[in-house]
Image: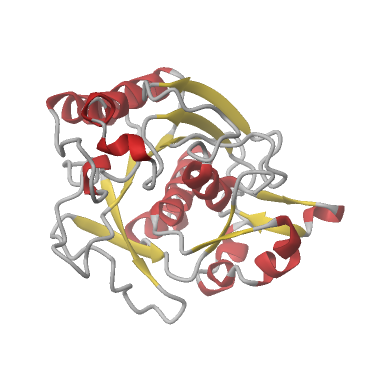
Amino acid sequence: MPHGLSQRVQAGVSPRFRRVARAGMAATLGLAFIAMASSPALADQARRNEWWLRTLHVTNAWETTRGSGVTIAVLDTGVDRAQADLTGSVITGPDYTNSGRTAGGPFWGVHGTEVASLIAGHGHGPSQANGIIGIAPAAKVLSVRVTLESYDPQLSNQAVAAGLPHAIARGIRWAVRHDASVIDLPLDPAATPGAAGSGASTAERAAVGYALSKHVVLVGPAGDGGAGTDPVNYPAAYRGVIAVGAFDQHFVKAPFSSHQGYVTVTAAGAGVTAAGPSGT
């Protein structure tokens, strides 16, 4: 559990701040590494597998807030609005990647949909008892496509990959202007093996500063190279971003989770089930 945010939620703060803080905690889970995505046939099993809802006392937190009135921007590979666990909860923003990838294709919306389901999934079926339920199931997701799937061949295309830090920067600014309370940032595109892009950028750093000046909560994955060279991961490493590592259901830090000094909190991230795009 992200203790700093938890303490603020429990303190005598305004309902609005409670909603935003809880949404920030939802984003920390969404940013942790996703080990497995569920399929429609595994919907009931997926709900039973959501061990973090009980272990982290999320179900108790729902007595205070389920994220109603909060908009969380998911800056990722796109979010499938038709996914049963997300219907009615997703607002689709622009695609800044200039990749030409389209919704429904194999290189669009897989990781982004999984992340969004962990944040704001509301389940489906009778009493919404099936499928994935997120930490803030009443929140709205603002989807902005700013990066590519880790297996997309276009990551090795310099013309596309080199522009992704600028895409992330544009996505941050767009999300702030469209009233996002929390922004869920992507992994550094340069951290993917074979990627042609670069890490930190002036545009990203300035966009992060702009969002912080508007009192928007920024959450980013700390990086999943902990078992290897453990490179610095942007935008998580920028000052002011809540950088998130991962642990498993026994609260053991995942081997892949970053050990860098900028890691702020760890969240459930190993052995996590999420909802993929519809039709997958």
